[in-house]
Image 1 (cartoon, rainbow, N blue to C red):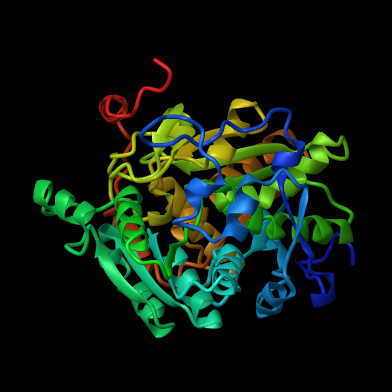
Image 2: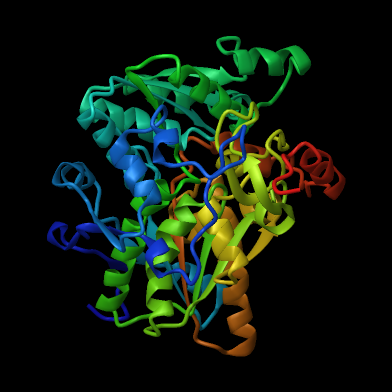
Length: 455
């Protein structure tokens, strides 16, 4: 292959056999999770009610590489290795000397990057005799992925979907049900956490923090049930690194290295999956990409949140994790990028941000959808709303290259297609999308209810 290639593909035999654990190469270890009551560091045993031991071991591991089980690779082979494309028609439209590459994860059965972790999570649970998994989902991509994965291993799956997305994207729930999952709008009347929210706010649009509370509450009530999370935690980010490992191999085929890596961030899994392997190469001095996280202005956990210990859910049932947070009871505006509406950023991503290993910015949703439409009309793929924030940044950077004449290589991850998000595109075309910058005073209000640790 050469640099003129438009689609850069790997053979199945070239699929990576190991996930990469970035913790092994960080200049400082991330802060530990704390017990929600005592505020003391917790050990692996504290996570046992929620996760199988194999995933707990991965969560706390400092091993650089963890082997992908063959049974997981066999399911991965349904869609992996995923293609890397050069966005030639987008480059031509922008008249830019930049070369834009995107790693396309929409080829998975669920249409997003989420099965990269859903499959191993279902596998490890099944191997330990778990019969049922509960989870939350925002836009529905994670719920779809877990429903697909549990179907591969004969597990039951129960999903709480954020109410705003549940009503906006009904066919996501239909997809989950097709794979055998049970789906509830969150907040629901099925849990104490849900009932409390509805009593206070009957028309609550929901949030991922609320949905997590409901899923966790139901998981701990039965011995045959565990909880699965689609982002935020270390083992989830670990599983996603197959994206970046493949992208490294694909770019090597055309003798390229990225000057800029740009990814969308909600909880952090897609961004981590793309850039962690490249960061390894950067820390080793083998390349030097600039790394940029892009989040929606309506849910700006990195750019406006505070870095401190907070709960991962609204009800305060999870361990306290040090992360960039808007406050655990933050309820975001119901923007259409539902997967980017979590109150906190992954603790590991947050720690790396504090170490200065990447930069972050926020972009409004009308700018993002404009970029998504431009991408669709040039490259043919309708992106999910979530990656449009990264596409917008990539387009801006490519335009800047036109001004400067710099031949920059830009890499991004198109983490999913938008086939179930057309109502959002209709709202954009109708001029009904509004830009919303989350007010600093609301952040301060929510942060006032965050636990004070060590003082």
